[in-house]
Structures are given as C-alpha cells and as structure tokens.
Length: 220
Ligand code: ADP
Ligand code: MG
Image 1 (cartoon, protein in one colour):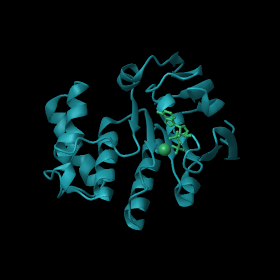
Image 2 (cartoon, rainbow, N blue to C red):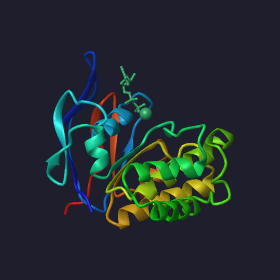
Image 3 (tube, rainbow, N blue to C red):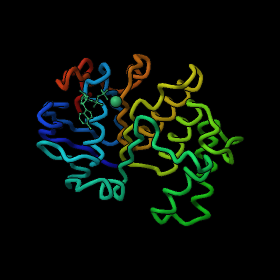
Image 4 (spheres, rainbow, N blue to C red):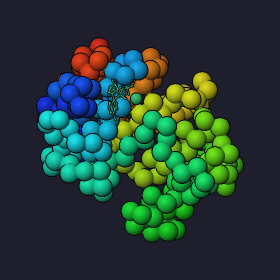
C-alpha cells in the first residue's frame, strides 16, 4: 500500500517545458490514465514520478517522504515500465523477470515462484525460456508487465505498456493492471487507448505539457 504525491512537479529540457507544474495526490488503490498526443509530456511525467529524472521544480513523495533518485524509488517499491519495455534482449523472458527480484534480495525460491506466476498471468508460461529478442513486440510488452507484476510494486508506472497488444491481450493486461490497483497499488498508465483510459478511475490529459482533467480523481 503506497500513496504517491507530486507537488508543483515540472519537467524541462534546455528551456523546453515538457510538463507544466502539476499537483497529484494518488491514494493506494487508484488507477490513473495519462493521455495526450505524442510529445505531450506523458513519458516525462512518468519518469519524474519514478524519480528517474530531476524535475525542474517540485517534488515527488511516496508515503510522505520525498524520492531521491531512481534507486531510492525502486527500493521503495516504485516500478517504471518504460516505453519500449527496457528489457534485456539477450536474456530469456524468465531471466528478465527474475533478475530484478534477486537484485532486490527476494529469496531465490520465492523469486522463481513469482516469476512463474507472473509469466502465467500474462499468458507467457510457454515462452519463459525464449530470448526476449526472439519474441514479438506484443510478447515483449507482456514480459515487461510480468516483470513489474512480479516485483509487487506499490507504485506501478506503465508507459504505453499495452500499445502493441492484440485486443484480447490488451483487455487481459488492462484487467491485470486494474487488479494491481485493487490489491492496493497506485497504478499510472500512459496510453493512447481510450478503452484503457476508460477503465482507469481518473484521466489526466497532457497537451504540450499543460495538464487538464477530462475525468478528475474521485473525491475521498
Ligand atoms: P510523450 O511521452 O507524451 O510522447 P515526452 O515526455 O516523450 O512526450 O516528450 C515531451 C516533450 O519533451 C517533447 O517535446 C519531446 O521532444 C521533449 N523531450 C523528451 N525527452 C527529451 C530529452 N531527453 N531531451 C530533450 N527533449 C526531450
Ligand atoms: Mg512517451
């Protein structure tokens, strides 16, 4: 269970404002969709929320404590599934899911069990031994999701993680993301897909870094 807060968070690159100052208050169990055209600032916002880039201003807090960099964020249960998946192509699907857990000191037997369960959840139980480079784009996307599910992140930031999936798998993966939220995670999904956005509890839209709320967060 985690709470994710952004206060006056903004991102700039050499004077280009990619994300104008934004306040966010995401309680455990919330799924937020971040929508907007290409170049709108979706990835920049997710990277900032993951502690993976230094914001121009503002802070990101998890459970009330500011993040200090990507390692701190990862240690505190913030997982980013980057656009493009961030997998190691020369490792197997299984290894890609397993290694980050071992790095986080999950006991090996438990890590193996969580790997098998996560690959099953994404429908890739038959493909675990295949090298990621041998998998299709959609299968790679599901490996990236399996890796994040296996980590049991308190905050799961998914950057267009359903964009390469066929309709059945997209529905299944959106349901799996929804289930992560139901289990107490904060889930943020950047997406072009109106159906995925509709499943979220709220929708934040970016347009040239300017924030609007087509569907605001539920008042708690
Ligand atoms: P989206 O994910 O919505 O497509 P991005 O966050 O990737 O948007 O990009 C927002 C803006 O920031 C775009 O104008 C993009 O060109 C610019 N941008 C993104 N990353 C960088 C970078 N590393 N250096 C400079 N400009 C960047
Ligand atoms: Mg992007």
